[in-house]
Image 1 (tube, rainbow, N blue to C red):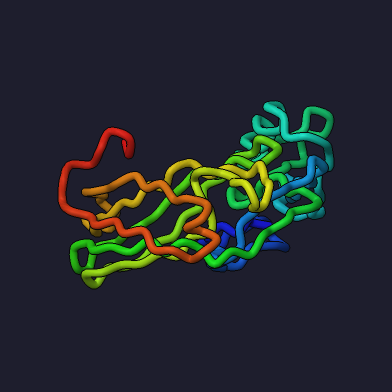
Image 2 (cartoon, rainbow, N blue to C red):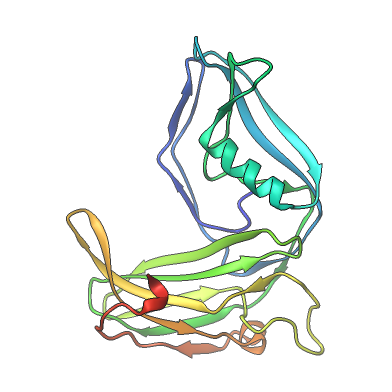
Length: 221
């Protein structure tokens, strides 16, 4: 449902008869998405805007991830009332995206990203994933450094190679950033871009990235 992403959700009141409980899904580290089908479903809740009674959970179904669908996704995340029946309000939580009926994941050993960062700092690794249908999502992991830090990631940034799996789900270069908590907010203070080769993914190789204090680069702003 979440493409192997990490989702941390604090829960939310939906209506008088329904709510979404808090939950946490950890990111997949040995499985990467390599194919999604064009047929999708998009779940959402329908409730009475006046009484706040939940009528039902329903889903839109369609084909192909178009710009129109992306705009509709944003509209559903905000919530809207239908022109034919303004008493009914349709909405879906921000963690829900249109979901392909078929998703194929591949097992990989995964590349190990190791390095050093200031003791006690928060370290995150982030990349943008574009599926074969053109849909985009963010894959990320976070950890706390005690001097050294380590991530195991499933996506390469160079795409398929001869003799390997042929796929069209592509990852942008990773961004590794580190920061600290200040006034209950994360302040990012350093970062680097990292390329991961397909062979490093398949063979479980290690890529070393050390972080040092510096002003945050322009590509993180």
